[in-house]
Image 1: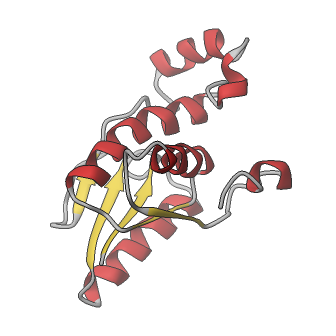
Image 2: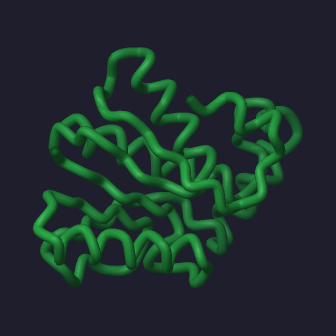
Length: 146
C-alpha cells in the first residue's frame, strides 16, 4: 500500500497541521511503509519528501489574487488565501497521486480533501482520502467528505 501525507503549508507555515503531517510522514517511513510526504514549500530534505509548488498564503501575489476571488469564487472554495493555497497545491498533488499510484491520502487541509475526493469521483485518482479534521470546519462542510 502506498500512502501520501500532504500539507499545503508544510515548509512555509508553522502550525499544528504542518507538525502533524511531518510527524505522521516520518513515523510511517520509520515503520517501513511506502510513504510520500507532500509539502507546499521549503526543500525536500528527506528521501520520502516532495515539494509541490503552490500559491503560498503569505505571498503578496496570493493576497492580491484573493481580493479578486473572494468576491464570487468563495462558493468554489477559492475565496481566501488559504483556499487558494490549497487549490493550487491540490493541482500538483493530483498529478503526484496519479504518477505514484497512491492508495491512501492523509490530509488536514479541508479544501485539499474536498478537491481530491472530487478528482476521485471524476476518475482522475484512485486513492481514498482521509481528512483529519483539525481546522474547525463547520458540520455542513464536513458532510461533503466521505
